[in-house]
Length: 141
Image (cartoon, rainbow, N blue to C red):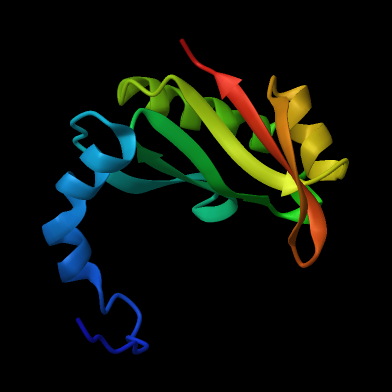
């Protein structure tokens, strides 16, 4: 059967993925999966201004820290640690069994996450910008 390949606009395949998702996940994981995915933003504010923020994505009983940023002049005040703790509370609410993140291997971010209880799970060689990335995890339950 002939077919053609083409590039779509961003989100151009959303309807197709939504229609085929359940059966595709069932085949991929070899059991029925109900996949709810959502991102949540958490902010630390001072006088109404954001001084730090984190974004986590919750899906399939996992929470992934996609971003965490604290203003440089406000670092080392416990803001980042508080954001991660609140993210863990949110992940627990959604019955996530672990949180993960991806950071440059052996960099400041890895040291920060490890100080917050995360452990190195894997290293992805030359993953982003041809740099090694560490997959870190924190078990919640």
